[in-house]
Amino acid sequence: VRLMQVSFLQMIRNLVEYRNYMPASVLQRDDDDETSAAEQEASSTEDRSGVYSGSRASASSASSQGARGIGKAMLLLGSDVRVKRVTLMVCNMVGFLQAKDVSQKISTYLTAGLHHLKQSKGIPDSFSGDRLYASWNSIRVCSSHRVAAYHCAKDMCSDKNIINKLSIGLVSGEAKCGNMGCEGMKKYSYIGSLSS
Image (cartoon, rainbow, N blue to C red; front, side):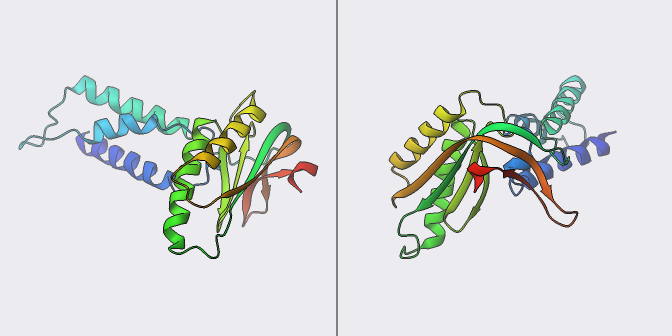
């Protein structure tokens, strides 16, 4: 049983790491609270006899919390496409090609952008070079999506960590949203006049 528990905890740690490389648009929720139970349980220590120092009850409680946490991050892999009212954002860094230390600037820009998106319930869809795509009310419900997107854009433009000026476009309206593509390549996408 102890070996199964150790393997389970290692699996949780690995899933949390893999999640960092998965597009947020594929995840049902964008919460980080599922990591706390895994990290808490993973930090348990064993004594020299190989027995956990924590009680059996707390170990089983943390394991079940970890399982529920992983359940929260279930993947959106279905192909159902629905019409939704969404707000989309496209953001570019001005003078990106002339910037020195491009890699570091991209990292700083994306870190700040992801922070503001999370604060406003926005979902980062993808990025290419300096172009960041995000959406509101597409996967995660956000009734005030237009206002949230506006405040996110405003906060990103005034963020002192982003040295370059930003060019941000926002559009709101109805779009067909869902996983689209083929068996070999699928992506959560938007179809409609606002996404053109």
